[in-house]
Length: 302
Image (cartoon, rainbow, N blue to C red; front, side, top):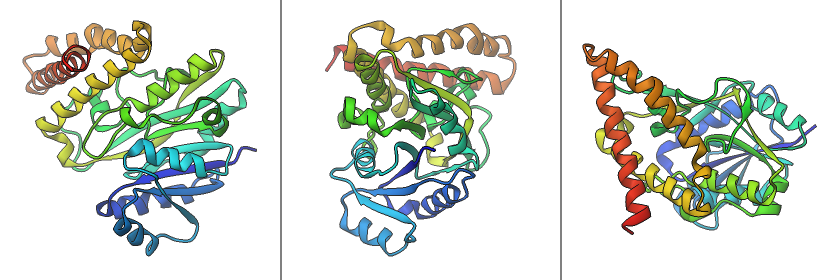
């Protein structure tokens, strides 16, 4: 039986309630985690705050540096389980989350397993926000596979890897991951591509039955956030492309774009008489424009 270390990265006191709800969901797992690790940024005030609040069943680790990649790396280095699972501090796990993640590891060629991330809207999903753009708010999006399949990389809010893989290929690269308000999202694909380059016969699995619920606050629904997140997504894709120099590394993005232009956008164009679909079409164009500008700025204008 695999032992799972669950890593939760925490950088703010303001998210205390979210952190407590996340930890409670981990305690209620049908497949109990071997350990729960909360990784804190190296901020004395933050460290003192959480040490005074968190229960003794949670192991606190202090990161060597700031940023999500550094925090995840600290969690991996301190993990005692043979599987390391990651969940965001503003997410809660379905009761069967770990059980369903672990199913994938019965195949010894599988080195990583990710799952589905459902949005928990603070005030309900806005009608103008398309499901195909849920990646903007850190969730799984319409257009992803609907059944268990092999993928290039999992999404960071709901992913796991065999701990031994880090000893073989190294850790998450901190300069392509999220840092405070720097909304890059390149650490998971970069790490996964490094795995495949070093170990071409291994697999990463996506299991949509392994579910976490990610909270989406109102501040993530502004046009400014939408553009900044989209722009940084484009920057991240350019970084991934530079990692290899081959367009094939963006195969996931190619499949997604094919889905948008074949299904999602034509659907909205056919229903322009509806304000809901008309506004969604505008949001699509706004977001895709942001991604394009981010990609071009990173690739050609830096």
